[in-house]
Length: 195
Image (cartoon, rainbow, N blue to C red; front, top):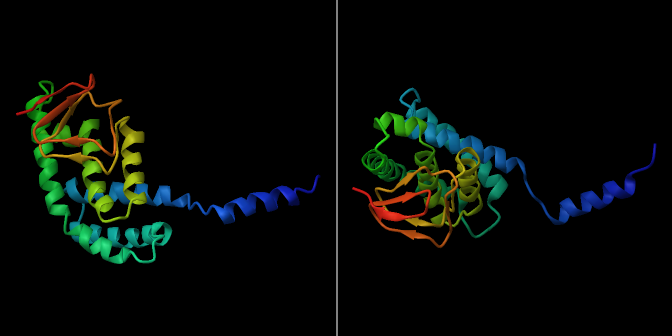
């Protein structure tokens, strides 16, 4: 069996120079799903879930807080204050989808099965973290939604309230995108007023 010591040393040298904590991706996936359930699942104990999310966020801080001047623990405290507003915005988005998609039957259907709603929900959950200068985690959060739905929304985009995407799969909304209030975006990338 050949001695692979040179190969091992070269690979380890690369990892030392380029520390990429790939387990961060899995932890962000867990965090993202916990957040979504905390907001919408009536079977989830909100108090316990927020406590669990706090512990999960501590793991994310250990893996992703690379700026010593940033108080990453304070990021969590500031972030959870945004959750009620995020929930209100998402309810407006769901109502806009109900009004803008003639095939939709109920808000429950939208919350549970619409990929466009899921993508905008994860964007809305990621955006405040992005604004709090914690950019890698929100980018990975929106990648969770992208991998599930085919909708790629950068957490730095600016999207107003009452937003709906019709047949959302394949839509890309970049970091510099600015979308106003009451906008419907369909797969053909035509903008029109919704509501």
